[in-house]
Amino acid sequence: MYNVWENVLAEIEQQISPANFSTWFKDTNLISTDGGHIIIGVKNSFYIKQLRTRFIDLITNSLTKNGVTINDIDFEVQQTTKSKVRPREVTAASDLIKTKVSFKKSQTDNNGLNSKYTLDTFVVGSNNDLAVSAAKSIIDAPGTRYNPFFLYGGPGLGKTHLVQAIGNELLKRNPEYKILYTPISHFYSDFIDAIQNGKGKEFNRKFEKLDCLIIDDFQFIVGKEKSQEEFFNIFNDLYQLNKQIIVTSDRLPSQIKSVDERLASRLTWAGAFDLQLPKFEDKCAILRAKAELMGAEIEPEAIEYIAENVNTNIRDLEGEFSTILLMSEVRGLTPLELINNGSANINKTTKLHPISSKQVVEKVAKYYQLSVAELKSKSRVSNIKTARQVAMFILSKELSMSTTKIATEVGVKDHSTVMHGISKIEKDLKLNFTLRDQVEAIKEKIYG
Ligand code: ADP
Ligand code: MG
Image (cartoon, rainbow, N blue to C red):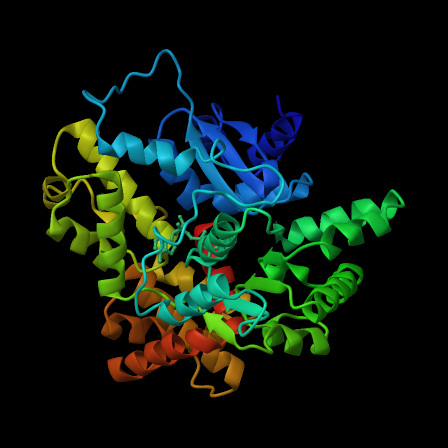
C-alpha cells in the first residue's frame, strides 16, 4: 500500500547488516502515517521492543528523509495465519498490546487529537504535579492565566500525552470548541504546501477560527524562518483574542537555536512548566496504574524491579512493562518468576551492543575532536575536562564500571576524581541541553 515504505526499507537496508535487515525488517509494513502518528506493522510483539530500542533512530531518519512527518511511532502486531506463539488464553497482556499498538481506530479525524490520551490515565507524581495542575486550570478556564502554556521536558516524559489530554478534555466539555493539535513539523510542511499552491490565505484562515491551538515538539522549528514568522503571526492573533495556545518542546525556547528572541520570550510569558524524570515512587505509581487499567496481575516486587531498572523515561518504562507481561503470558510464569530466573533481566536486554571501555574513550575523544592522549592528559582546558568527565559518566552508566577502573581508563588519579566527574555531569545534564545533546550523540555513536 505504501510505496514510501519500500524506499524507507531500501534506505535502512544500506545501513545495517543483511542479517539484521532480514531478521527485523523483512516482515514489516507501514500501516498508517495519519496525522503524523506513524504505525508500523510487525509480525509479533517481540519485534516491537527490538525495533524500538535498536532501530528507532534509523526508522525515524529514513522516514523523515522520505518526506514523512512524524509525531510519534507505534507498532501494531499484524495477525498472520501462521502465528506460532499462541497465548493459551486471552489475558490482560494481550489487551495491553492491543491498546498500546493500535490506536488508529481511536483517532479522530482532522483536529489531530487522539482519544487514547486522557487525563484519567495520566498519573500525577512529583515529576509532573505542577504541570498537571496548570493543565487543570486551563481546562477550567482556557485562554486566561496559563496562556500560552509552555510545557517542556525530555523525550518520553509525557508531553504529548498531557497536551492531548487537555485538548480532549476541552472538547468533552464543549463539543463546539475548535481545537487543532499539530506537531510543528506538520505546521511547517502544511505551510510550505499552502504557499506553493497559492493558498496562504486559506492556511491562515484555518488558524484564525481556532479556540485552542496545540503545537507539539516546537524544538523542530530550528532554522525555518518563514514558518517561524507565520507561527508568530498566528500566535499573536490568537493571543489577542484570548484563545488558548499550548506549546511543547524538549527544551526552553531560549535554548532552541535560531528562534526569534521576541517569540521565545512570548512563549514563556505565562511561565514554563517542565516534566521531569519520574522518581522511583512515581515510576511505581505509573506501573501500578497501568496494571490496574489492564487488569493485569503483577507482583509488587516485579513492579519495583522494573521501576528501579528503567531510568530513561516513561515510554521505556511502559515498554519493559509490556515486554515482561507478554513474556509472562507466553511462558506461563509470573513476572516475578521471570525476573528471578533471569529471563527478564532489563539491564541485560537493553544493553544490546557490548562495547569495550577503550572504544568508549575513543568515541568520546573523537566526538570532542581530541586524541585519546589529550583526553587522558592532565589538561584542565574546559572542553578536554568536559570530554574526560563525559567519558567517566558513560563508562559508569553504560558499562557499569567501578570508579577505580574508570580512573585508570581516563587517566585520572583516583576514584574520588571520577565520582566528582560523574556527579558533575549528572548535575549539568539537568539544565545544560547542549551537554544533553552531546551525550545523546555520543551514545548514538557508541550503539549506532
Ligand atoms: P513525550 O511527548 O514527552 O515524548 P509521551 O507523551 O509520548 O512523551 O509519553 C510517552 C509514553 O508514556 C506514552 O505512552 C504516555 O502515555 C506515557 N506516559 C507519560 N507520562 C505518563 C504519566 N504521568 N502517566 C501515565 N502514562 C504516562
Ligand atoms: Mg511527544
